[in-house]
Picture 1 (tube, helix red, strand yellow):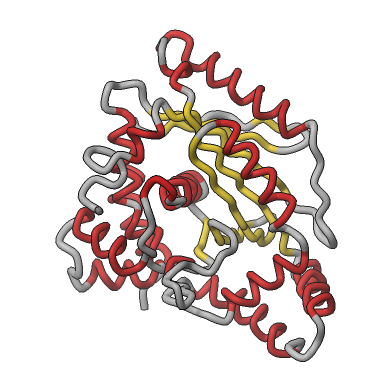
Picture 2 (spheres, rainbow, N blue to C red; picture 1 turned 120 degrees about the vertical axis):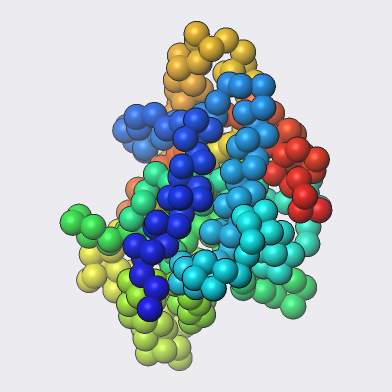
Length: 312
């Protein structure tokens, strides 16, 4: 049976090694919320290299860990390029690239898997479909981590575009998508649909799904509170990674000032979100803002040389 270590080895070889020199992470800032800065390289083709890395991650975003290990063992794909095209065509809804949230979701997934290497998929959201071929709306990312400090659910949101668009979108998501009723609806849904994920994830999913069955005749409020009580009983905390990947070419205009300008961007995002407050009924999540200025979002989304190259 495939193991998470097998998956980790594949991901490290195909993605982590490639990411070196493309994505850079810096120390987090901790105040009212957590702020995690990222940037890409400053070379002329840095944005295109980031787009390729994201495209190569399509396989790892769209498939469960066990599926990927099995695919590699059986030689299912001849290259990451072929795997990306297969995943894009068969696992993703068909949307206008200009309005597609996929690049932001792929980038957030990439950051979680690279910089939180003990993260397990709780669900592969791309395979869940409504009758109109769109994904079930919910969180942009569902992972969990298990270490010496306990278990954490990672329920993320991602935005890519103009800075104000990203700030407004993340703010709305934090207000609307993290009530206990919304949380329960999404977790009960994904935990009823097990895919080829790790045994560690299946253990948690089984417990939540059993609760779903036991409370199925109760009202939404009761079912939601039952889930919150279960999370507390199991000492499971909730983390909310929020990616803001926005246009800010000024960060990259002078290599000698790169770190200072990135720090200034983080301070601006921090000042914006520290002014607000978010109320979560029944649970107290940790909010982590992933701040990632992009030299050109248009180039990153480009069909010829950016993320979408060769996909559509």
